[in-house]
Image (cartoon, rainbow, N blue to C red; front, side, top):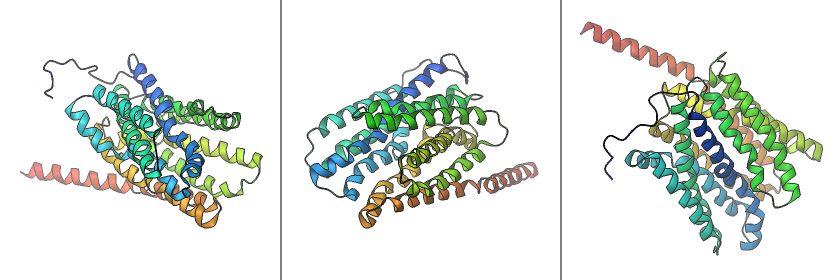
Length: 329
């Protein structure tokens, strides 16, 4: 489809306010419904196991595919967004999610659900989410961390999508509220620029790793609630900083291509998580191994951030050499 000539751009520079707050509201709703859909897919786990007599590992692939594609489909989103526009990508995403869940009502097996409840909603989520992230990074600069945190705070309202029982609402309410407040505070602190944003991200990943080590010890309700609150608080902190850190590392607004490339590898890492956790449970009949596996993943994620200073020094050295070579010519 040829691009229209003379098409007006919605902005010429980062506004850090004004109409940008409508973009924040849009991103907020995307987090409530799209991210909520991914998080709440676990509610159907036991139902699918009973209905189709499947193992935890087999059933885990449904949510794993959905979560992985919602991130890993970034390069595909970039191609479509470059060919058409952000509005078209968002509408296509909404149709994929709706169609996938409607078809899932006719499911006859786990592989069937892997496509209709995994692939289709996963792709739709990627389309909606990536467009929202790219737009907010273009509308905000000085307040990027805070605006992103407010948007992602919508994840804290995902408990509204799980009103199946009062118990579920009570549980989600604690993590809703804690995660939302944590993200807003984290975003506000990061915008103060006291230290580089990736240092905050590194800290949150490490404490998330430590927190998960205590998961198997939460054998009573008070201990479980304590673990849940701290887990939501620290995970909310790092989730608020992903986009700002990407923008800092890219030295400019996150474009569809850069964001798609970065999240493609994130999605690849997300894919085997639930099946591995399910396999660990099937093998040991306890969730302790799953907690330790999660802790290890958080710790490994933080390790990569220790190499940023080295990468920055090498980049600076290359730029210096290029400048010297150009001066000699």
